[in-house]
Amino acid sequence: MPVKSRKDFQVAIICALPPEFDAVEALLDEYYDETIKRLGQRGDANWYRTGRIGEHDVVLTCLPNMGQGSASSAASSLLISFGGISLALVVGICGAVPTLPQKREIILGDVIISDSIVEYGLGKQYPDGFKPTVQVKDTIGRPNREIRSFISALKTRSMRRQLQEELSKYLAQLQYDSETDWKYPGAIHDILFESHYRHKHYIHTQDTACLCVRCQSRSDPVCDKALEGDCSTLGCAGPRIERQRLSSHSAPKPLIHFGAVASADTVMKSGEHRDALAQMSKVIGFEMEGAGVWDNLTCLVIKGVSDYADSHKSKFWQNYAAATAASCVKAFLTFYAKENHEQGRQKPVPINGYRY
Image 1 (cartoon, helix red, strand yellow):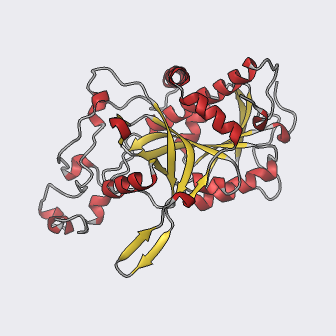
Image 2 (spheres, rainbow, N blue to C red):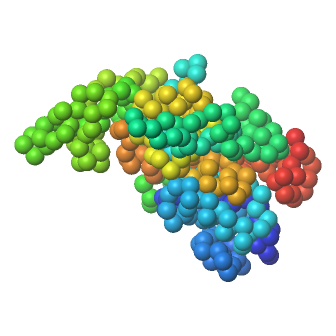
Image 3 (spheres, one colour):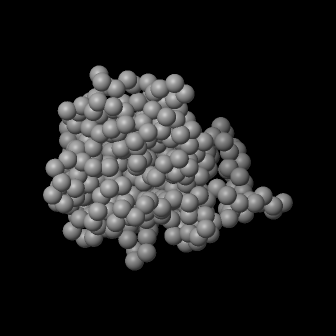
């Protein structure tokens, strides 16, 4: 039964890109837009889609631009129209640290769920370059105790396995029901280079006699065309890191990883800087909206891995990563409802009222 008031919504889903929004919208179990206006109240410039996932009434919005500023403004406006929101899920795509401790692998299409958010764009500009300041005190976002308890439950072996099975089920549903290209692109396109290997022109012709010819060290610049080009066009063929999970002939099922997520207005496109920050701050993923939303709302980042946060970053995996993230969100909210029923309650209660 549709909700009667904006105050009944407790979960917001915030996406930065239209493909991210489309994937979540396609997995709604019910739409409420006939009873809740799509536009916000006076003073709220956001555009909304409202509906139900499992037993949770959700409001879905897409940002006008990527980045912390846009995310912060949208989250603040959201509370004008939906004052009952107690949890925001920042959903979409991200870059990832490909190898975690104990040699655990993250591959493209996996999903990262934040247990904290680290703002890494802070620092100081010196004459010899920018020096980031990332310390424990810069970990700005950690959910409240009830949400942390739920995340801890999901980290257990049995719950994580069930969550991943639900993710795969909803992903198959999404791929079957939609004409959008949310299919798995293929392991042959999941390429991880050594972190120091630069994305530049390796195939040189008369038309590409550019800065890339003189790029020999990690600090040498490359040309603008190379920055926007894909690896096949540029001839990137450096040493690749073999991934155990890609050795099978069948498409690997997406896995879910929990950890700290780095958030900044800067796109991470350097394998060496990625690894240095991962070692320093123990982050496992990179995105651009979580810190902005956290300024206004308790939030979790749930994002599909579309690249390895290195200079070879491309948009090739974005649709599939958006689909795995949306499928994970639906699985997440379904399990949240199941926890509620196991406590013997007959209907959803405010998220901050859950007990474990």
